[in-house]
Length: 306
Image 1: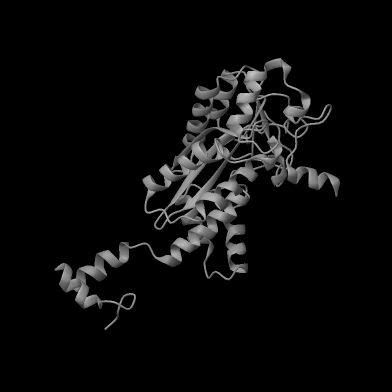
Image 2: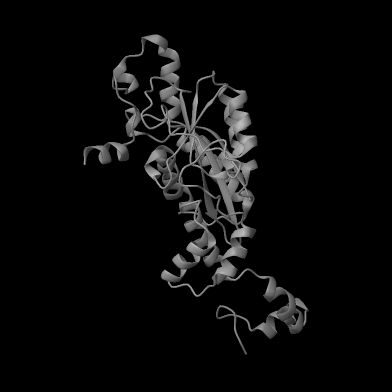
């Protein structure tokens, strides 16, 4: 008789729960998420979010190269269920082209000069794998202070997730017109509802070049920190526990306690408090801004110096 994890047999478990073995095989076992399928979805999530213009056929090929025995129809079904189908792009994007669903904006953040907060925000989305599902985290980061100014966690990877994070940031910061909002070209940020929110507040839209993760290195750096310092060391039981723990990390640890080398080893909240108290008398050294140069991440500096 088959044993589960070296413990009770299926018959013994059914007798203990007062259900028939037929019910177990017909219902419970078929509905229980399989480790293989969850691992496959994890691999698809990783590949799809790495390149959001990557279609199901290319992802199917990539999975086979990694050793997965899976056909393109199953990959297509899983991507559709997880809302991961790619958006189409043309080699040369014309903003008035009726064949293109959403407008793609030029990259304005790459060489932007910063000397204060609320001048450049960057946005990104990542996923977190739970035991039986995936959840998604959308964040908006102020580049100058490295402070997370808006975030949202959801079970759905859709435009509503990004819009809720944006609404949170706008409500908290109340930025003046002229702020630059930078993101990748994902449909969550290119869709009409999101763009209308930005334009209504006088916010300038900027998007990364295709296939260049360094264009949004600030957001990528935060997502890496979130995964390494919070997510990777946890085994969240459910959505509510994950949302609570991740939210606490963002608000209480990352914004309030974590020291950043770019801020002269101060947390974002302390750095912003010093800016607000010092006002116009803050020195250039304290603000960590070099005259005539844009603010850069350590990764960007390393690449530039190669």
